[in-house]
Image (cartoon, rainbow, N blue to C red; front, side, top):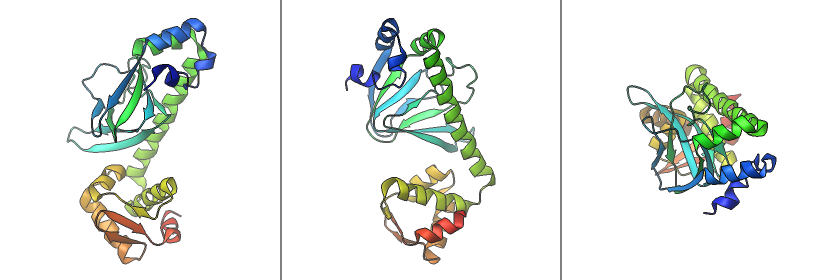
Length: 221
């Protein structure tokens, strides 16, 4: 992991003065996390801005009853500032970050990102635009949970995986799918069996075979 090279990939790098670039370099740390290792929790200090150099992160929140709601994913080359409530005071959503695989991140310390936001309008705009983008994702997830039929949510998820991978075979457990669609495993199991009986998919051990892409799209439409 080369912090100097990765820092230069940030979209606002070329808009920084030489002094600001030095500040950013000094205030950025590289970290590696193993699969299923927590990156940020409720009791942790403010992490600042996170940039994924390699791997992926699941961002979620947890209710008082312990139910997890997946909000979005941070993929390779993407940033997140949802963990920086100490930087952007309008952020009041407590989130947790979990490495979905072996993941390398850059963490721009909260004091550093705050200093750059105060001195550079490009950094400030980047941070707020990023926060708006992530909050839009959160609102969309809440709308899905509250208003969308579960068959629509399931069909949309299966199609999103297909569009991302280009593969008709989805190798995921029902538990993993339940986490992604924010439901119980039993509910997922029943819906997958219904899709199978409708000849939309075929269920194999640990694998879902998509058989009728058009049929799944009709559910969404």
